[in-house]
Image (cartoon, rainbow over all chains, first blue to last red):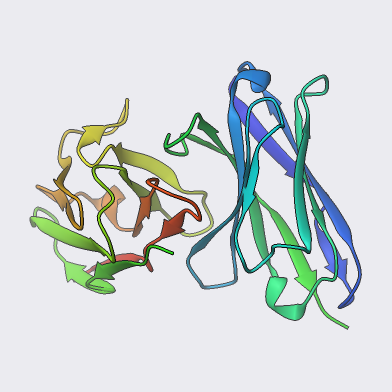
Length: 119
Length: 107
């Protein structure tokens, strides 16, 4: 069935790095724009980044610009989020979502992976 | 960046009530607004997109309206499964933004 499955979360010290993955199945991954969103404990949703279907266009939120990098491997149907220089305020559940194309809503969401930044 | 202000932040209602949640954008976004429902421990679920288009499989008691800066999500007859937090999202321009959420609780 159509699904997104994130992995790679965990507990990491401030200043360290982590790479999240999001494996897609049940749809043609290479035809769809993909996004990362996070949700801090007890808080709302925060959009982080988007990558176009072919990987050629990317946008990110100011809060993670220069530290987080979105990428994809269409041969593996997988989306990535490389997170560097992590801060305690990056502690959140990280979710990937499908946005199909520009201005398209997020119709498929992964279950999320928890990232805790703590010493 | 476009700010989205949802109101109210909390709403207490009874089964069968008509519920209205508003979302105001800091600048015009045409009709590029979506609404999501999130239950505790679950991921968001798309309810409405393009301000008023119901996502497939979403009950018809949910409806959306509005354009440019003022939008509304209405639930005509609140059901037990509708108690959740609702978020609006603007898709007009990057960075994409979400409203702060409206938690609908049982009265």
